[in-house]
Length: 362
Ligand SMILES: *Cc1c(COP(=O)(O)O)cnc(C)c1O
Figure 1 (spheres, rainbow, N blue to C red):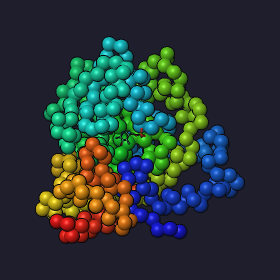
Figure 2 (figure 1 turned 30 degrees about the horizontal axis):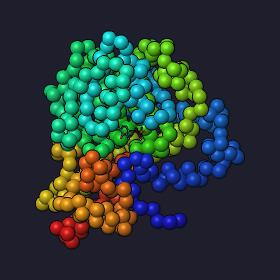
Figure 3 (figure 1 turned 90 degrees about the horizontal axis):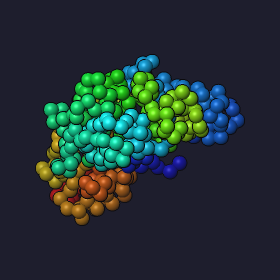
Figure 4 (figure 1 turned 90 degrees about the vertical axis):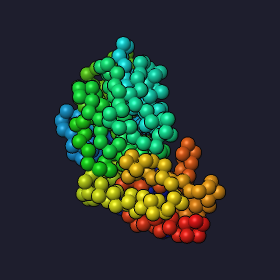
């Protein structure tokens, strides 16, 4: 086997080695069926069991009960940007958006194509280096829902507490931090996430939706865009992304073995502290993009004194097996994505590399 690197890519992202090894063992013949999951009918018993286990595990770890449905859809989180307003933003109503980064902006732009929107808060003026204070959020009169992004993958910021929107449905894009800490899913009417960051591979998009929302989906919408149709058919209206659901399920079972969201949160805090300490103890050589009280445990963004040094950093880090550290062009500098599956050893190696790089170039 060739050596595995520490993969800091933002998504698709590193997976637990145990998950990959299990997928490898089961690839050619899944549980003595003589065929791969890749070749298996989505209406077969073995696939059904995977689908149900993934759904039950998501509900359990998000702390939601019988009044929620879990859907496995396709089209990525980006398709949810439009599906949400298409299903809920009716004529004469307004949807509120809290704009904290590029994906939040995209979600808002899609909603604008469908109906009336209101920006309840935005931190665009400071290049999204912080999460707005709860007191800055100004909702419109009686919004049909409020949309937010729990972790801003590109900027490296994360909500530390969620707004209370009362009876107004709160919709959250959790693509880059789902199940990385304990959350009371009942706070949200709809949670969605692409699987490729914290839950497996691209292909499956997870939607956790409160049942009452399914009652108002407009009947004139194209069938594949209706949440109620997918719910009624247990996400088997058409062929689901079966292998991606399978990998998500392996990741969910792995997560349970790590102590679930509470266990992984402690691990994630310890990992992030290693890298943030390397930034904070550098005397200004490394400069974090996010304000301290908005820092993400999932994506750590930082700059170096010059773009030349940033390029050298990425190159030399790659040469020692620390890959995927180049930041997004909108922020510049570096970004270390350290989702659930990134090991503490990976963060330790990065922190040591940062100290060493500073010694040579500071
Ligand atoms: C990656 C990401 C998206 C886009 O996901 P796709 O599955 O590529 O459509 C949306 N929102 C957030 C917060 C993300 O990190």
